[in-house]
Image 1 (spheres, rainbow, N blue to C red):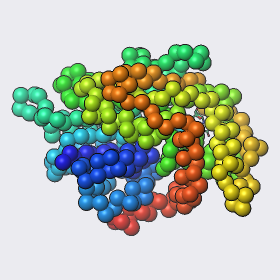
Image 2 (image 1 turned 180 degrees about the vertical axis):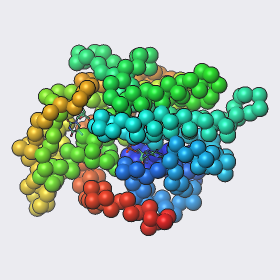
Image 3 (image 1 turned 60 degrees about the horizontal axis):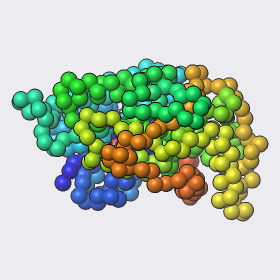
Image 4 (image 1 turned 180 degrees about the horizontal axis):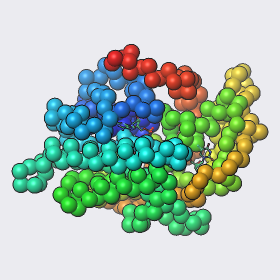
Length: 359
Ligand code: NAD
Ligand code: TYD
């Protein structure tokens, strides 16, 4: 049985990944989820796994070397999937330091602990061990709005926000471990994800939440910035395929040629909400394009992101399966059917769950 150490599993992508893995492998795998439970970590995302003997949770900070080393000492970890990070660009503009600590120092701690646990006396590594570092396309900077330039694995790093600079730092550390020690790892750089369990500070869940409450929908700048959107389950599948089939020491870009301007997303979310909400749902009267408010632009706002997913398709056989039309409907339906999720996240009640279950 393979044992996975997943960092940041209580966050958006981590929790979707853990669900995906148990759906795919069932009792063939064991997952240990290590998460500090910051504002972005919501253990309720995984409450259906509380009684699963193959799942366990450890509350620890990835910068805590002793706590992470203990997990490796007490468990024969085969795979590390490293999601834990500070992930929101706007927060990084306000408070950059914690991004450096978690994203750079935390990744260094994870690498050190995995290396110590997996290294043999001759400097090679135990058979079958692998570390997968989950990163972002934002490390590559911004593309011109020309519809034909893309981020490739070979595109030089040119991060602009403190968030993307700290992720670039973490990617370079993983590269350094691979180059220096032949440390068994892969890096994935992925475009903007969307789906269930995403904290409503990011564009799509924020639009859904604010629309349902009749609050303003802030559109930064002219609303013409472009992001390349990927359904979170497709990302989870890509991570698993790179882990199992990707060549060691390689980087893979994960994205699906799904570029949209922000204003298109805003309009589509409103239209889809109006389509999906029944007429007698009291939330429907709040939803309107009148809520759209153009606001001051984000500082250093990257204009366009777009991934070239050719390498992962050719080498690993991964392609996205969920079209945006299907994925956005699925996503909005999930938030409409789980109104208590938004309620508990916005009131802060989700943070009491850990004390109740583990305290
Ligand atoms: P998220 O903010 O939803 O979740 C981050 C998780 O990490 C939370 O559970 C949080 O509690 C945990 N965490 C934060 N600091 C920690 C620390 N010091 N120690 C232990 N745990 C800590 O983020 P997400 O959107 O799920 O992103 C996951 C990963 O994917 C990140 O590395 C991010 O850079 C990357 N990524 C995200 C996107 C996206 O669109 N969301 C796109 C590309 C790459
Ligand atoms: P976001 O979801 O924060 O992801 P990222 O900055 O990592 O791409 O933002 C996606 C895009 O939406 C980005 O161009 C900024 C823009 N945006 C708004 O216009 N209004 C908002 O309230 C938010 C959160 C984002």
